[in-house]
Image (cartoon, rainbow, N blue to C red; front, top):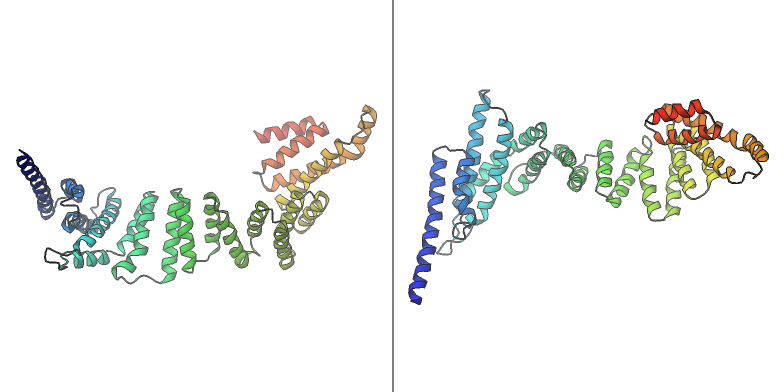
Length: 400
């Protein structure tokens, strides 16, 4: 009885293996008949997971061949102007799928046969096919981008960037490849894959793409990825290249030092920036904010005033100075006399002038930047303390 059971198991295994071999033959027949890649894949799919066929190069070569064949056919259709709606995206998917199946077939095509010899059957064709379609991957990425399929655009550009090293293809110049990596980063960013976007931005930079927008975007995605080290490093590098036209890089660097409680480094950075560019109002704003954060309110106010003297339309400087005046008024209010009469005199002489001056600067700050709702909130409090109902209502309307 035991021998019968073993024999039965062997028969079942042989039958299963035979069934999967039949699947491969059916898929190959469908390929030769010109069936679509989707149809060929549907036929051969059972062979992907069967141990007897999953390690055969032919199992993966057939769907790969089907994908590239259909792509080539669509190239002809496109040349005639008869490509159906969605055809560009279909072509892109065929390129990506074909690459995937072919690269799965390659290692199995290099396995030794029953005599211990390696005789690749498909490798040369696979390499030639992928190399021959190399530039098509960039076109596919553009098609995916235009279709707003940013994940696939990223994937197609990744293949475009990595194929040369693996398939003996001449890659474009570094300047071109840097632009491709930059575009790939934008695709990842659109797909909210911040870590991948940052990695691609850094690769673009390494290839020589060092335009200002790369640093700005890379810092943004690094921030969204919560990679504070990358934000600092990028800002430091950008400061050396574009610091004179954009003071924000200093701010990013200082934020990092503040997070680490490294105040001396923060002061060193901003003082060096002011020394190198003493007419840059924004640097004085940053220094003022740093001083304010360290409790040096009076010194901070002087730096905000200096920034306004250099740039009377600097919304942040105007806001920070107005805010500082409000904070000074609040502090004085805590020391006001308790007597109603004396308190009113104290308000008129000491506090009211501060609120009036603050309101002027805050209004100017909001005029320069209508998105500065913080300025409106301080204005709301200033007019409340000034008992100016009309202006208070106006501010509240602007806050709605």
